[in-house]
Length: 93
Image 1: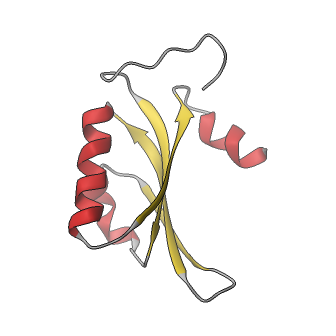
Image 2 (image 1 turned 180 degrees about the vertical axis):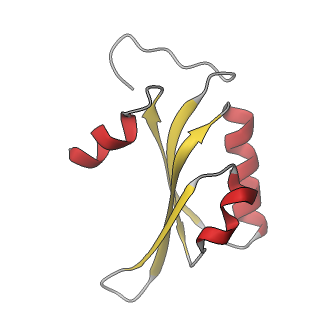
């Protein structure tokens, strides 16, 4: 979160969620339209990264609940900001 930026539970925001396991792009509609990318790590463990804008923190809780229901352990949840270019900025750093 940038200095001076305040986030409220009802604000739109961009998030990156990392889970252990494979999830393909066909789940995007069920997961609020988030972009889904899976990769195999050095230790042959599959991780999936979901990135995208969620309408509020209730939508975030819904996505996390869906992932839990699918049996995918959540490794991390990262708040990327509220501006549309926050994902590109975080990828550049």
